Image (tube, rainbow, N blue to C red; front, top):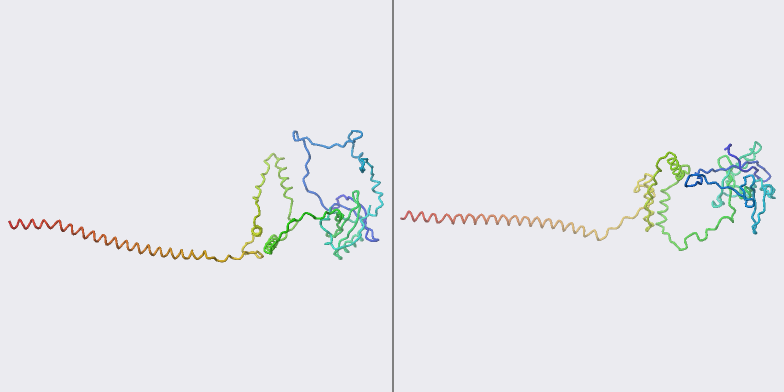
Length: 343
């Protein structure tokens, strides 16, 4: 942090106490920046600044500020003009009030800065303000001038340092009119219970564990193209669909969240379960069908036994008839023999 260049030097005005400080950026951007190129040959595209009156390119040292009036005329404004503004906040962060932190609407929060003590004489009053903020559990509301305009700020303690959040003026925050649904929607208690269960299942997260996956994917593409390799294939998008049943969607979300955390959906605490369905009259025919099946089996067994007896009876009758025929054929032979004997 000591090597970070300050963007503003001044003092904190705390009543009659003045604390010399340096303002440094508390955040940094890790986004990947691209250059504009000519697609045909890869040449860089650059913007040149021309003076409309002289029709020539000018250097950065020749460029200043100007305000365009309603009639189109330009009124030059120099840095000296801005430095001599009759404002107490031109070089001072003026604390105007101390309020509870929850009084600040997050919509008002803008850029964040660290306020560093400037020199040894600033150490004691800096520490005094920091400890006073800690003990009061409040934040300081201040006004300061930065980059050509007066701004609103909030001072709070971060670790052992004092941080300042730029705040939008109240009239810069739009009212949320026309944003909410126009129609009246009724939310049932069961739906709220499932929403609560989903919130409990998702739980909390360590913000330090979150990272920019888009930036990492862009870095992989750049590395692959630089090495002459194939660009990583994009994953298949998740199949989406219309949510027709809000309750079913909530239940599925709770179940999926628990499974992703390695929990058993049936045993996990806090899950809203459906009541078991009551048995209907449809179960009775199934039992009757079972009895009917048993009766059918018994009838089939009796029928099979009767068929077996009938078959046995037919076999016996057939055997008797065969024996009778055999006897009838042998009888004439006996008569012939007796006739011969008589002769």
